Image 1 (tube, rainbow over the protein chains, first blue to last red):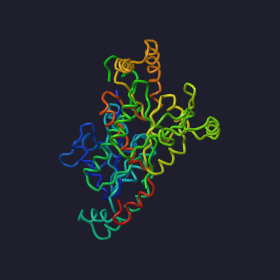
Image 2 (image 1 turned 90 degrees about the horizontal axis):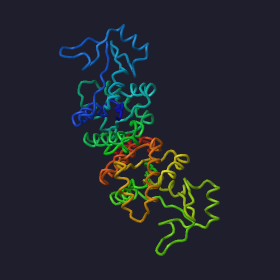
Image 3 (image 1 turned 180 degrees about the horizontal axis):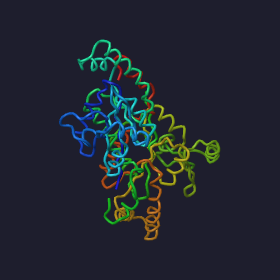
Image 4 (image 1 turned 30 degrees about the vertical axis):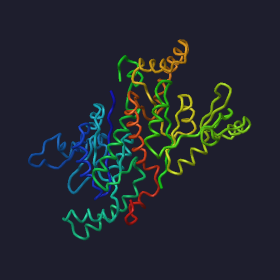
Length: 204
Length: 204
């Protein structure tokens, strides 16, 4: 039985992490999204353990202290984190766990769990990146400039990742990531008893 | 400019290394075969630097002493080896250098150059392996048994490799290896200045 792996899809704001993740999930049934934990209150229709693990602040803090998160952050007024347990259980089942996360989060994960596969999603050009940030439409000129300048700085961290994928078109980015998945599925270290599989009569 | 890499395709006798290498070379133009050095005399039509680097025994020995081979071995009455220089020059040019080699040779390379991508080619079953060994036709029952038992023992070394590919059908094995190539081409460590590529206007 082969193990799965944690696939960290990361990149600056405007690189298209969300769109690419969605397209990938629609195409494949061997990928599950990592479920985050949060201290914010559930919104109408949100299901615990599916959209998020909804936790009290006390519970969240005790999990932080017990080193039960792969990464966590305080955003606006709430905590968010990636519980290790869920990820590890899915990996044992053979699943690919997809975690779409910003660059800071990915770097935290790399410290705690370097066995993950780290993919940096890049915009094709900085002009295109600016356009994508602008197209979100909800931000002021100042917000746009801040996001753009942060994105530019975050490109410096690409060296910390295993793979880079240029998101010029979503289909191409998905193709690249599927090749990475295909290849990672062939990794010896994720398989037990390769010899046994071959030497058992009719085994494959 | 991206670097290429050394791809070591290895596996026991009967795993189909030769057939798969040939099919792969026919399909792609970004792969070059590693050219071996040998002390045996050139046969009619063989070209130095293309089929082999034909060397005197003195030259070969001095290269061994100067650590200029990734691996070398004495077979029958001649020396054979993989010169480091050729491989490194092709990698710098961005080529994938394919080295089809037995398990002992691959393990030597791993000691000298762990940056290579190591692929272990497996037969689908041991029955199939025996059949392939038998089909070669030129061997005695004893030779067949020796080859078979060596192949069985060599499966123990799969753990030393990065990837394994089951050669049930040549097309499937080639597909798997092409996914590995696609993925390895996206490795951050083989690329310089990823940031520069993105931030240069119109760059890709």
